[in-house]
Length: 152
Length: 180
Ligand SMILES: [Zn+2]
Image (cartoon, rainbow over all chains, first blue to last red; front, side, top):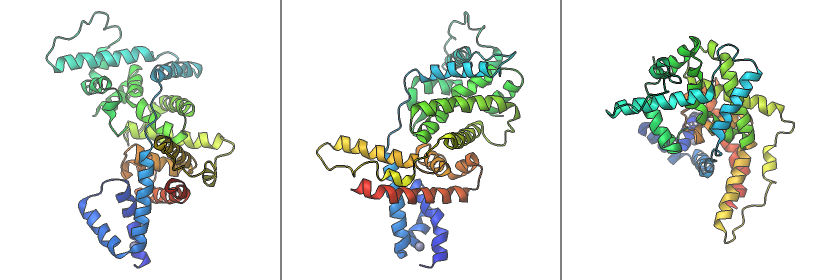
């Protein structure tokens, strides 16, 4: 139980109490904890706190907030004159991304692309070329928040 | 070159929609981080707006040394520090203990659990901003210590020390309340 060695294990305690660690790291830590009541108590205490914190559920995103954010960004940007000249139409860009996603998804599934009538005005080839992962994005949108899993 | 790099390049080349695509892609992780950091939707919404407006202004200078998501979360962390500084009376952590009596052991286990969540969230709110950021990013965002170090612009060792200090503090404050 020398203090210097315990000090070296503090980072390991934090790592192991807050997420998975490689087996060899865990074995090494476990070896120390079995012979060091002080670090064992520290580890148990930290692990308890982590469990309490993780128990608190993710607050839901209020309905309509993303649309509100689009409007706020548009207003904020306009107010600050950030977009003088080349304006970003947030709602249009959203539609562009969604449409590009749809086109890519259709291509991926070997289906004929959806009717492109009217799409060219919002989806420039440049934007389409920029979104190679759109099929994945479209699936995430389709699945709602589930697509994000535990990780943001 | 990955998708984000292409979007950044396109934005610099004058494709304004590329920035909007980045907003759509990252608004959720940014908002969720800020929601946990501030403890309420209104402040989180204001700060999310602020983060993307700051990002818009500085995307032209983005060096590409880290990922776009990391960069946005760094802006978000800094925005929280500024936001906190603007508040007049940050809640001292010790005050959390005085917020409520220990959870009652009545028949209503659901209400009891919600009360515990509230106390835990209040205690997280009362942490100093950098400790709070480390806790939120690791425990709620699932980021690795290496990623958090990049976001917080410090070493991994510093993040772990910050985390340890935060968890120890929370244990002292919450222990008597949660364990009853
Ligand atoms: Zn020890």
